[in-house]
Length: 261
Image (cartoon, rainbow, N blue to C red; front, side):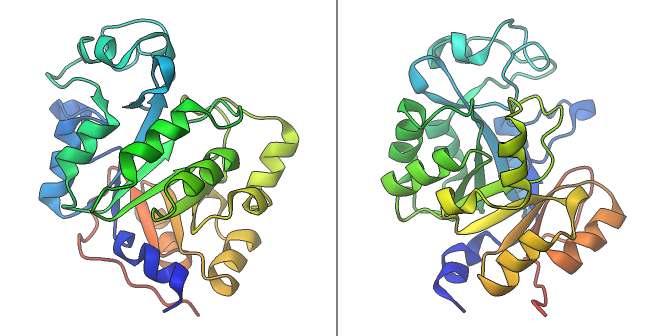
């Protein structure tokens, strides 16, 4: 096994997208309840983090609050303590800070943290993320569409595997859409020159595609794929990727093992 594969090997298993959530059962995405449900079911966990005011990382997908909470406005307009006081809809959960999330997971299962970006250069947000994760003892990976965020966190927390997220970007609530050239660079993993990722997380709807296949086969970059929601997509993930980030399905909780041929 190569050094890159070794540093990400503990992350390779089915990973519950935003935790094991089901809003119809009162389990809302990116909450403590969803995280604990994934742990109890033997899955890894993927969560999203946004920047609160002054760069504090909070566990939340959307840039705006209204879809999942009783609050209004942008996440970035509030401090961490203010966000924690905004009730969620349909659950007693509250928005978590990244530090709280790490205490809850505590190495019990692999954790992938997607850094939501405004496509500016790295700053206090990335610094706060690096400070939170650099001494975390469990299996963890940090990833983002923004190669500058990936590179900055990699420099500040060099022991943490870092990943480049790529594939579809259209209409995603948590991702401001970049310009055409940046989208092109992401689609073909040209942003890897900046990010220097240890792994790739690629849109299942765009597989198979040459760039992630080359990164996996010839550069030993483990390939995660998101978001797997159907049996057909699960079969595609099994064929082309090392691990899937899923929702709605309930795959086997054992680590997935794939043939790199």
